[in-house]
Length: 149
Image 1: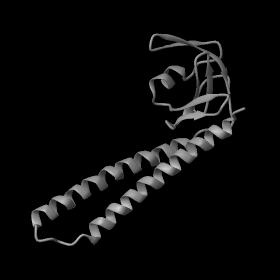
Image 2 (image 1 turned 60 degrees about the horizontal axis):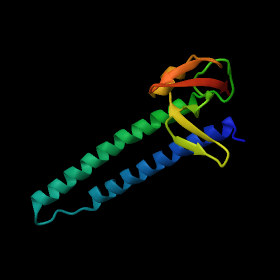
Image 3 (image 1 turned 90 degrees about the horizontal axis):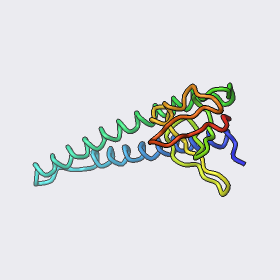
Image 4 (image 1 turned 120 degrees about the vertical axis):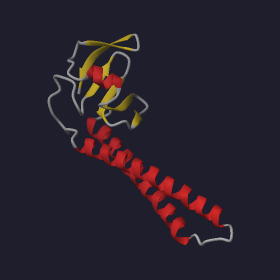
């Protein structure tokens, strides 16, 4: 039996690992930039440095996005009102289960699968504010809300 706490931990681990991976890549690039010596092919050297700088900027943006995910996750209530779908809600539909927190992918056990999705996803936008028994139409298919945990 999956618990909401397990889903929250899964999302937390996802964010922490992503941040650590990005920070390591930034450190590696920084090391490459500082250890690289100017070669006799000056233009080639400058092009290589520029490419590393661009990669570092891209990783900086990814790190900022991951930090935003971490902030959103910190706002997810550990327990709360389950009468309507909101942030931190675990929505059980006739087709699939969704945990509305961050986009962390699928949490899977032998018995069940729960999709951890961001509140900004199209399906989450449809589910927000709904109650048990309500039906939403997503990609032409009816999704009836069976339970909210």
